[in-house]
Length: 518
Image (cartoon, rainbow, N blue to C red; front, side, top):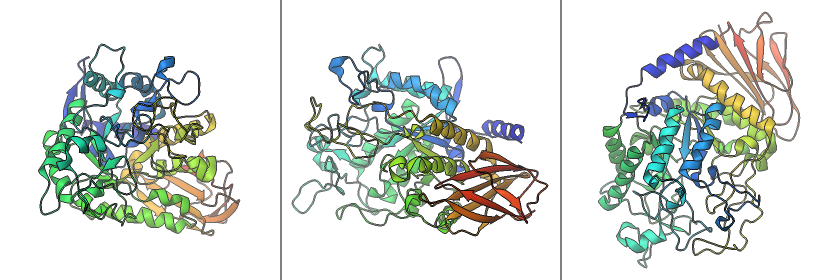
């Protein structure tokens, strides 16, 4: 079975025909991200260069340059690429690398989403000891990722910083008092005026066009559009079409959800997820982050069905990421403990979607910083406090590298990502079947392809032990279910599985020479 999958992956790799980039060694990188994403084969890791490999020598959680400590840079980020490669990660989502605003800022370094420029790089990410220019340091990082067959998605900020407003007020939406609009409660940014469906604002469009040019020049394989609903569909269509003339495999991911229905500002446009997908986005976030609120397996099934149907609703295929947890979500370990992180790993591995993880989740980081919202000893903005969102990865300060030391969780993460990579052809080409469970809080599904089946059972109750009887059509006691991820082994008798689950437990089994229902 595993040999067949490896051969299939090699064949898939030979069929990609996009834009090529040469390495210094003579090797050529061929962007295949769009095809990989649309086949649900991407295992994506979100990271913030500013903290990704920061060196906090005294362990106080804050990078103190006066003490010789080093924040994350394009150069030291390269050191962790092998770690990601060995974990099975094949794509990284790099959070914004554009310069950040320092006026009316949040945090002592400024939010990475408060862009003060869209066609230059953040000088905070430069390694001062490297002879390379900042741009060439970034190119080196992208090239080193590609050498490891890791694709790179670059984050495109949705708004401009107050600094950018002061320089170019004509780019921004104004309220009735002719003041720049603060979208939602994001006090450090102002709403860009992208125009309407009838008339695009060319000045803002050209700002974003400059970002696309920079991203492709650096070597990016795709773009993640931050809060994509803030721009008209026509704006995005023209920008996406422009990028595809440069690279047909350039992938676009919209930060948007089917459960988002409220505009972020009365002064701006609001484009729902379906219009964004029609405009050319390859995928969106979905509503997987609602898993924490789902008490019944039927809630999970509904969203799987909803997203599977999206694949055939548009002229071109679409997909979704496993947005169970993102940089905007509270750490899973604070929500439902370690089992919740573990469940997220294995749902990402076995559902028809692209796996998605945030830096630090694999080791159980709770992103609780003891210095958060306290007065800072030094600052690089006009904010004198270490602003932070409790339980969310830091994007506002020069702070520690994400990650704790939960080795058991880390091992499970690596197993899940590698398992997804192996069964990727099954997810892309197989049949997804919902199985009957006697307990409404217990989900059960199967993926079958090429006479091989993966069975997945799980308990959505994170407080109590649960039991369930699960029926798998045509399964018999002559077959052998190989445990892939399991704590307690389900028993098969009387033509059904009898399973007992710990709170939040997920079980994954592999059955060869068997397709569900055949």
